[in-house]
Length: 388
Image 1 (cartoon, rainbow, N blue to C red):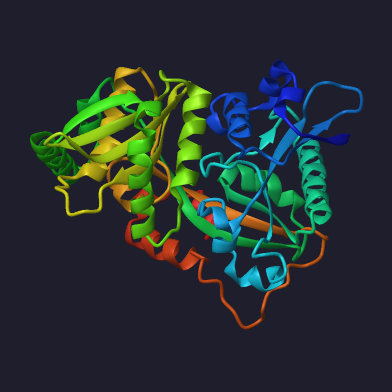
Image 2: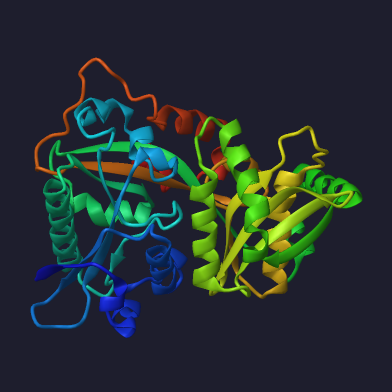
C-alpha cells in the first residue's frame, strides 16, 4: 500500500472520505475537519493509506501540531507526559505530533472496518510509521495517540513493539444510552437513592434557574470566558481565544440546528452554560462554563451538563448522550457508562522512549482507577481489565 500526505480534505473526494470515516463520530467527519481547517486549527497534514492506483481509503490519520502556549489542555501532551519533557528542552517544550483527533472526544481510529484484521494491522503499521516520519521531518521526537478507547487500543496492540512506546492510563469517557421514551423513563432506571437526589437537583434548579437553548454562535462571546474560568479552577490554563476558536468550529461545522448552548439564568443573568453538539443519533456535551463570583449555584453543573442535554436528546429522538471526560463518578451515578481511555507515545525515530530512570509519571492514573473501581465495581465494565 501507499501512504500519501494530503494537506487538506478539500483534496479528497467527499464520498471517498465518508466511506472510511465512522458515520457516528462527529470528530471524524469531513464537516468538523474542514471547519478546523478554516479556523486555523486544522491538521498539518492528513496521512491517507490506499492500494496503489485505487481511490478507496484503507485508513487515515490527521496529524496536528501541539503548542503548549495555546493552553489547550486536552491536546497538550506535555501535560500528560511530563517525564518526557527532558527531551524537549531545545524545542520550546514541544514533544511531538498529535495523531488522530483534536477534540478529546474522537477516541476511535479511522480505518476500514471491513478489512481482515491482518490487513488492518498492516494499514496501522504504515500510518504509524508515516506519522513518525513526519515528526522526524519536523524535528520532533515523539508521535502521540491520545485518548484511545478499548477498540482503538485493540487495533493498535499488534503494532506496538517491545519497549518502543510509552503508555499511560488517561481520564475516562462517559456515555449514556437513553432508555425508554422520556426523561421520566431515564430517572426510573436510576437506583432509588440516586433517583431521589436527581429529582431534588432538577427541582431546586427549576426553582431558581430559567433555561434557554440558543444557537451556539449567539452565545460564544458570553460562555467562552465562563468555560475558561471552570478550567482554571481545575488548574488548567485555557485561553479565551482557544475556546472561542473551538466553539466557532463547532458552530461552523454543524450549523445552528445542531450546535447549541444551554443558558442557565438566575434573575436574568447567565450563571452557567453547557455546549451541546448533535451528530446523527448522538448528542455530545462538549463544554461547561460557570461564573466564578459567588453566584447562586442550584446544581447548575448537573443540569447544564447532564439533565438538560438528556431532556433535549429525548425531544430530538436521539439514542445516546456523550457526557464526556471529567467528573466520571458523578456521571456514572447518574447512569453513564465509564469507558477507559489511554495515551500512547512512540519515539519518532523508532528507538525506545528516553525517560529519566528516577521518575514516576504523576499523570499515570492506573492506581486512581484501581481504587475507584474497587470502591464502585458496578460502574466499571470488564473492558477495564486489560488497561488496569
